[in-house]
Length: 379
Image (cartoon, rainbow, N blue to C red; front, side, top):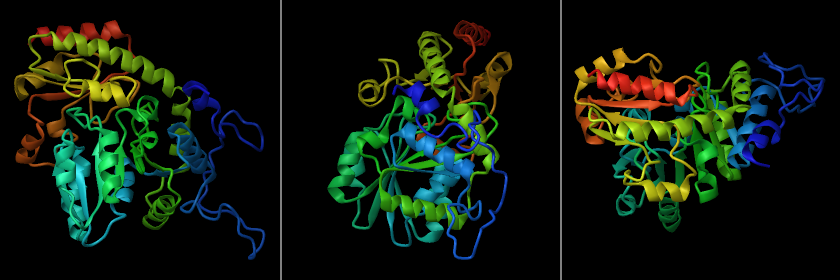
């Protein structure tokens, strides 16, 4: 089936007992057992819940994976993967990375004796050079947040396989609709389902997907033992969002490309970052592993004062944390997604006080372009 059909029919979308047009919300903490000898599929909602299980099966189907696990946030999903490792282990991560992941690596993993190294994600030699005898995994995020740098997924997987390492990929910006890391050999894929999977800015959630049975058991143990589960109501909301995910993302990505083409020519824009444009240094590589440039772009203005004046002049995009909603969302990474970093750490990543990230929603493309152009021209 093609993707829009898979999103509607590729997993258990309807209630199997009544034929209801959506999976019921099993809003319960525990399940009655018929006897002490019985070993039912569901005992306690931390261990498993039918609504959450339906979502997990759906995400696995869309990702092309055998196993998926739903967590209470994207960071909970990231933590479940990175805390697979222990004292004395070493993990190599991309330098241009989500601020929450950076904070987890720098402030929490180190407390558990897990060492980390950040490398230029665009340089395969840098990935290989950072490997030590105690290295366990390579962690990538492509396109990266917020500069949309592109990492060679197949290349990093090949490096990992040569050294017997795991690969973990945050695929939030592209989703499996535009980029499929499991098909390229990645061991664990992370999605912040808060974003495009849900698509309505009313849920916080994360997913981990894998084809490896042993890794699946370890991720399930993390989910069950640490307890960062996703509740049934939020699971149901994401399944609702998935039904229109293909249509939403098609519109958003189409608009993002047109907006990027316009912003690239505006004199107020110092730099534009969008892998769907030929001017992007990772354009050809991105084309080889993704079907389009996606629905997120970032661009740089003169300074923080200019950013403030631009944001106040806009009418359509909301100024907010996060991305992937039906509404366009303008974010200021230095004070939002990467606020947990020091100014020096942000500078190292290239997150300046003039950088803005735009998640393009499903508004009319011409209306968005008119609004953005008017605001830029007012500076």
